[in-house]
Each structure stands twice: as C-alpha cells, then as structure tokens.
Length: 216
Image (cartoon, rainbow, N blue to C red; front, side):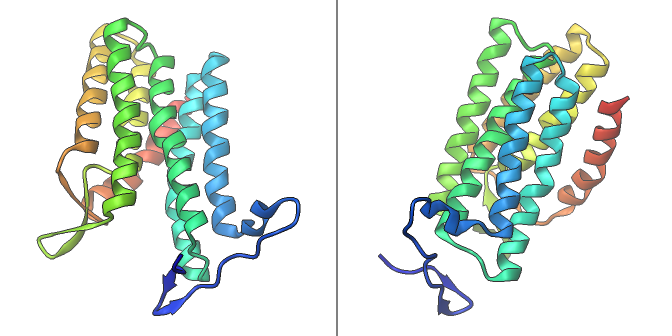
C-alpha cells in the first residue's frame, strides 16, 4: 500500500498498536472533524426533544468545522487517509442526515414530504462516495466539484428550514419540500460547481444571519 504524498514527499503513517490505535490520530484537524460529528448527534437529539431551532444552530455550526479541519490539516502537514475518511463520515452525518432530520422537525412529516428527505440523504451519501472516487474536476480553467457539495446543499436546507420554522405555513413547507428535492438532484448531477466562487462568500454572510434568526 502506497503512502500518502504531501508537498512532494511521503507522509509517514501514524503509529499503530496498543489498546486504542485510533487514538494515534488525535490531531487538531481530526478533533475539529469530530466536533462536527458531535454537533450532528446533538442536532438529532434536539429534534427528537422538540427543539428544531437549536438543531438548526448545530447544523450551521458544523459548516465552519468542515472548512477549518481541512485548513488545519494542510497548514500543519497532518493530511492522512484516516482524516479524509473521518471527514466523509462527518459530512454524511452533518450535511446529509441532520438536514433531513431538521427539515422533518420543522414540519415536513407528510408521506410526500418524507420521500424527498430520503432522496436527499441518499443523494448526499452517494455524492460523497463519488467525490472520494473522482475528486475535483476543471471548469473554465478553475478547480470545481462535480455536483453541489454537501456542505453547501446543507447550508441552503438549514437556512430555508429557519424560514419555515419562523413562518410555519403550508406554502412554506411545500417550498422547502421542493427545495430539498432540487438539492438532492443537484448533488448527484453532472453540475460543475466552482470552488471558492462568489456563492461561497454569499453563504458565509447568510449563515450567521440565519443563526441569529433561528435564535429569535
């Protein structure tokens, strides 16, 4: 098995052995990724406890974790296969499962609304598996994702769910249902999604506003 390569040199594998070999990967970026897992679990418990507003806050707090763990891994030279696998698992929980659970918590409970939620979860997981296999592509000379990334799709679900929570009308729930289905399709479609475009800057403005709106 080949070693991971970073900056043109092989990165030595993490030490193994002992009773808890996974603890050899207790690094700052992996701890940040683990925080995203904890937020996803807390969000699911909060929906079950009747607090979808706090669950949405957990989901929105997981979004910067997805950016920070990669930044720390690159900056500290701690990129590894373990970290990449952990990141995908965390994304599956925070950006595939929790958005669907949170949308259920704000009123998408009818059978015709549950089907798009199932589709969203499955599409997100399949999109993560596809990215692990294919990686980035090029679009107009820029690095791009193929399909909408799960953190971005989840951010849109969280923001729309906040609106649905504050304005619990049937038209709003129908709009959220349609948006979930469209986002599920966008994640698995052959859709070029440039990395670091203007849409990211807009999202970093909207997420804090959504968090404030959820707390009111």
